[in-house]
Image (cartoon, rainbow, N blue to C red; front, side, top):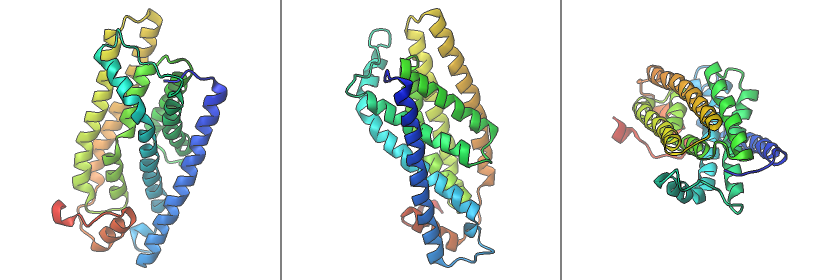
Length: 268
């Protein structure tokens, strides 16, 4: 990860908040326009609820921001794979020419986390804990490279959770497709998170770390693991909240919002 001063890191994180705010506004207007065009009953249909529209825009903008961050991560993937071949010998060092890619990655998705903490008072405590740990971990990684390889492994795992985001979107929209997509999302989430944790443990095991650094990294991995276990429990519970009642109107509006083809033919 980069080795930058906090005078650079903090404005970058604030810029990430601003970027997410703009994208969320665009997504919200897009969703509202599609729902208005569908002429849904304002007092009876679930999608007409402003709170639901806000949440759907939050999920959609999260997917967009993480896609942007994923593109920024692409130049760093070969360096990370080289590091994993021999963590004790091949240090994961981001060259000066690429250090702003690393900063852009963490600024984008941590900007989302900061925005969510401020603008969504219903955020569960376990999610707030997750966001605070992420922001702290990434800020320190960018400043002194203490969590260099661990930080990248964690960040990359965050950037590839699109199937779960799609499942959340469909569930909040009360779309009948949410159930099969959420079932896939459960397995996908567990594989992605377990893989990220295993990579962190593997690199620590292979490296001859100083005692203090080993303790700090071990405690961080433990904290992240505990939070992720709580999140995984919530993800599994989320399957029970998915609707299985098919509503052609809801499915049609959701399809229009996401720009997807009709999935009924292969989900049923």
